[in-house]
Image (cartoon, rainbow, N blue to C red; front, top):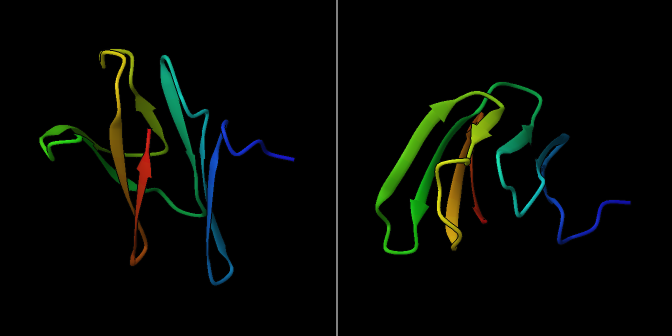
Length: 81
């Protein structure tokens, strides 16, 4: 069982994208079949960080609301952090 407050899970066909923990203090994990591209934006849409990989360092972000955009294969997912 995964608590909805602790992770986000999205299914695309046979592939599953899982993001945890949410909220995160230091590192956010992206579980996906392949390496992902990601972007973190604030609620105004300003890009704060971008990267490639399955670990996202959020240690430098102040407490607040952010959007994680994950591109995995041809799927784009937006997750509120």
